[in-house]
Length: 225
Length: 288
Image (tube, rainbow over all chains, first blue to last red; front, side, top):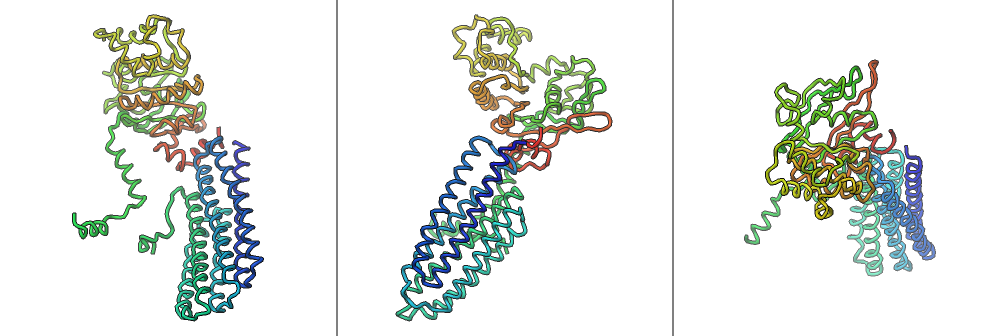
């Protein structure tokens, strides 16, 4: 048994979970800034992304070093590869949160439509839930939980469709036009965060089953029905 | 092709699914020629069983690695493939080793002919205390292959990637060569009689990393013409050079400890997703 190697793997995985916790904080900050039209908080969110980036780089170089020195194989190799991918997915989620903060700043002086705002908050909460499920499923090596991310993602997609219906209703109102356009991007961004959580679920399934398969396949949706 | 036809072809093009790729690899193996078909091989020395119940097929022009902890019988196994164990007192075997369908241990099979077709290189380079030329020419002379001997020696040395280094000193002692050169000389000696199979028993374990790399590159060259079976302690070496890998481990019963074949598969499978927990524990360094 290679003790130092196992310690390195454990440390990398702990860092990945820390990065996940930071992503949850940065996303919550972005959602609060949006709901409260809080420009200061939006700036904090943008600055906070550097912490996530530092974690990302630290994990990336840790994996590079481990691959160069330890040549992991079998489960160890799959764990390292799953961490490499998950690291990137988490970093992208933080970047999306920054996008929400930036969009918030652009339209902070507009009185928002309460219904649309509520539906964005719903989508945000679902995205947060998906990130939590993905992180827990990774830590617990829980295939069933990883696969459940597809169902959670469907809930975000449904909220997104309701959001679009409301957009169509109010997009004609001159005072709201720019705000609505910006919020369409926010909605798209939250939907993408959900997709990245599903991708993490796929990495967990690869780690546990040694077989990579897409949970959902946009180009062949009927095969996953 | 009209644009319409082109579009219609794109629409009807079958989807590429990962599972199809896996199926194609299996199909390729089915069409490969089997060189050794080993059926229920048990080998023992006196009352000590070295390996028990091995079933395995070795395919043409592939490198097959045999890995496993000390005492798992991997060297005994590879030595059975060219009857090198025949001279060992007390050696006995059960089961069959079919070489192109012929029982290697059949009554009418001549061991010398077996070893001509199935050459072997050992862990420690063992050149004769003779000239480089004589080392390579020795086996062909013994077998009466004396015609064009110079060409045969040159071809063997070139095949072993040694010719350029020794062509100006063929008449000097082989003992003056470096360890890595001596090992390649042994490979030249083995291929001088144009065997079909090369058995390599830990061929690089006594060599430094540069010499090891040369041997590994040489194996990639040699597999075009030869079927190679290599026993190695070095798992990364197996991962680097072998197409297929067999993992042997140690089992025991009230009769004692003996080697068993645990898993045999494509090398990437063994090192990314082994099927057996014992293989997983061994390749990840959690055992042995």
